[in-house]
Amino acid sequence: MATNVWVINASCHDYAPAESYGKLRFLSEGPMNKYNVTDMDRQFRKLLDKSTKDDFILLTSLSVMSAIACVIFAQLHGRLNILLYKGGGYVARTLVYNKEPTDEKADKLAD
Image 1 (cartoon, rainbow, N blue to C red):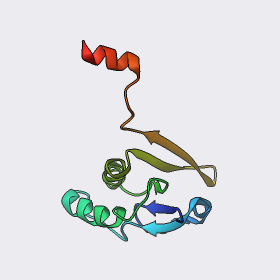
Image 2 (cartoon, rainbow, N blue to C red):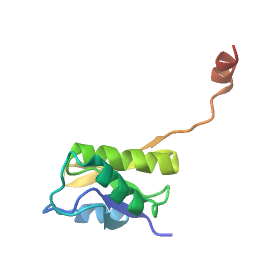
Image 3 (cartoon, helix red, strand yellow):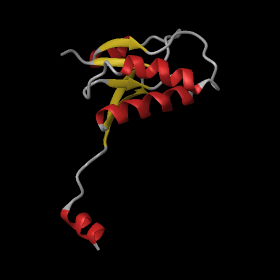
């Protein structure tokens, strides 16, 4: 299955350098009301339900939109793969959640 790059909002930026990470998919287009977070969640969730754990979120646009997209992706996949703009290109970073506790941590939890 091909990897996708989920771009928060289609705008005038050139996202072509991110295509080396996968096919560009847009979660929204044009101006959005930054206070209408429920609609953002519905719209993004509908699209991100089609994402895979190997896809990326490209951080751009309003911070609230990025936050919502990242939460949805992390809930779906137990991880977050993001692309950050750096020097004319993008760098990938991954955070993995829902790890099993180590034995030491498990022992502390049992106490």
